[in-house]
Image 1 (cartoon, one colour):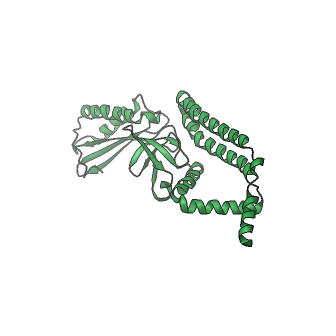
Image 2 (cartoon, helix red, strand yellow; image 1 turned 30 degrees about the horizontal axis):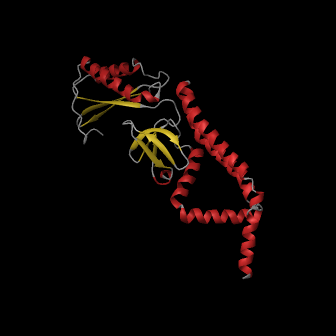
Image 3 (tube, helix red, strand yellow; image 1 turned 45 degrees about the vertical axis):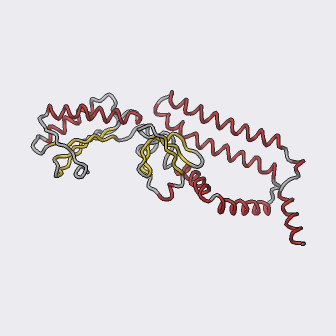
Length: 272
């Protein structure tokens, strides 16, 4: 009986009297935090789409960081208004929250923790092009639990942050405003490889999408199918990657024909 009374007294000491809790102030803090986060989520992407492409990824990457900082500030502001914070009470509250999260929201808590880790380690950020478990697309937003990816087919995929614990994450640009694009060509062995290589390089150098500060490479390897050429270059804006590859492919095929090189049909089993 005495133990029960002690537990009730300890619980009462954790929380302020209801008449001492300013619910109006708490409501204003939460509403203000939500409003600032909403403005940041709308304003920064708006500025990113209309500003210089070099600043786009920095502005988009600031959204999850601002949201996390605002939420932490709101929580630190509200907790003393509700709880009577002492060192002993802090240990009690932390232990209770840890047990509740561990048993009731294990997967959700894992994603939340992974989301916090992702904000600091930055394996992806808004504007990056990533591939996770075979899904490739642009990271449109980074939430507290999951990221939102838009694929080239305009499908929206939500990927929980806890994928970083168990899956490889391929980031094509890693915060840069451009990424490497590759156009492949398979040519019959009987041709002038030096002439073809020079012609393909000229194709990239004359593309309207090219980022001239990045290198242009033409790699070739002999395969059972024929000579495999890979034309590697960077577009000025990573959002032009598919138009860039199409442009390289169309004009590259024309350049091969002008150079007297015959293309061969690539087969999936040999086109590695």
